[in-house]
Length: 300
Figure 1 (spheres, helix red, strand yellow):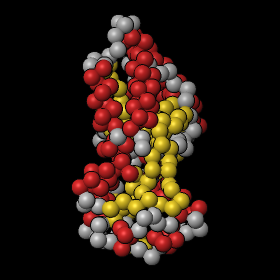
Figure 2 (cartoon, helix red, strand yellow):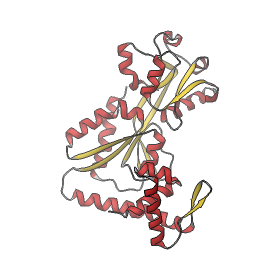
Figure 3 (cartoon, rainbow, N blue to C red):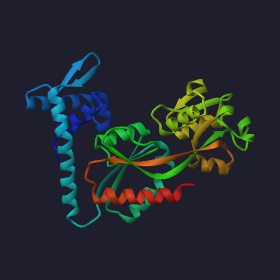
């Protein structure tokens, strides 16, 4: 029920970019620009300073931003409480998930949740961890499931399960003959990496640095934005990749890819991310408990 212009302003102020705000809101950039112009006309002052290739909040914009977050949160809370007066578990549920979680872990969870609560309309947005975190901070998603703890202020992270990362390669690759492999050994082989902003990329880079190997010194052949693309390239024999074991269960069973454990093992936590100070509806609270339990059961 909140003014759409305020929602658009909040997104632009968070991103300090009309283009990125438009992407997050699924709007065109001219439509975002028009909404900001309308709000500035209403406020009779400029909310953004337009500079060469960038924007910044004016003092008035800083003031509006401080109130906008509170107004939007209260509006969402009012809408939710009104809906819950019916006593039914129903309404929209906007879930964001990083690629690995969305493709290999969450479908079963969402299917079981829908079977138990058929009046809830779940919508899943898939992106890398960094993008999902941003959208939760902008309140365009109710909850995010990501592969790294939240870094943005105002967000709370809760561990929901553990995940093991393994080296994958073609079955004829030299690494496939090893029972386990260290970071030091991997330096000698071509590497297929996830893209910057991916939780898998962040955890892998940290693992290499922990073992005194700078990620930029790896023989990186390409960076890819999806586990499926990664597996397809690795299957050609071009190099190795590091992925969640859950992402290659099918290929291992079929014998199309080999998985080699890292030594020492590389395990990570997966996180539920939500606004720290935002009212949680009964639908969101129920889903977060349900997802944490189910993902914990699915974890190896």
